[in-house]
View 1 (cartoon, rainbow, N blue to C red):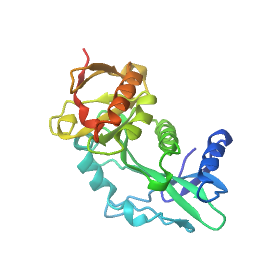
View 2 (cartoon, rainbow, N blue to C red):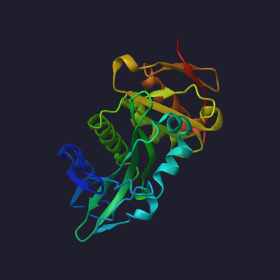
View 3 (cartoon, one colour):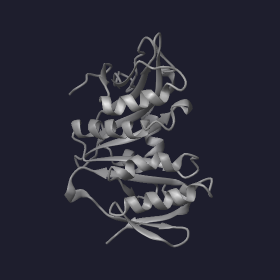
Length: 260
C-alpha cells in the first residue's frame, strides 16, 4: 500500500475488533461504524513546509493542530533529528480513528508520525503525538493505533520506531502498555543532549531486525530491576501495581541503561 503526499486512505476495522467497541459506545450514542483514516502530509513546498489537507465531514478534526511537524520533531527528538541525513525529505502521516454516527463523523483520536532517514541509511519512524479524546478512552483505541503505526513503519521499510512518554502523564500506564506488549524496548541513547528518564521522558524503540535489538536494564525507585524487552510483561504488572497509589507511576522508573 502506498499513499501520495496530500492524499488519504480509508480502511475498516475487522468485525471482531469493531463490534465489541460499538457495543460499549452504545451506552452514549449509537455508532454505525468505526474506520481508520490514514493521511499523508503534502510537501515539502518551496519553503520546506508540510501541510495536512482538510477532510470534509469530520467533526473534531482540526488541521490547525498539525502545524510545523519538523519543528516539533527537532524539539522532541534531539538525537534523531541531529543524526538525520542532511537534505533528505520527511514523510509525515496522521492515523486517525473515525467514529461514524448517523449524521456525523467524529475523530476519536490520532497518531501523528514522521518517517526519515539517518546518515547511516537506516530509516526511522518517530511518534510526534498520540491522543485519544476523553470520551473514547478505555475502548482499546491506543492498541489499534499502535497496530497501525507498526504496519505503516513496516510498509515504509523502517529499521525502528521510536516513541516516548512523559512521566508526569496521568495516563502513563495505559499509554505505554501497547508499546510494551508489542515488543518495544525501553531505551536510552548515547547522546547526552537527548532528554531521557532523568528529565521525565521515557523513550522506547521497536526494532524490526532481530540483529538490531538491544536489551536494556530498567531500574525502579525501590531498586527493582527488569530486562527489556525480555521482561516487558513483568514491567507492565509492576507499573500497574503503582497505579492506584501513585498519581504518576512513570516517575517510578529512575534509570534505563544498555545491558552488556
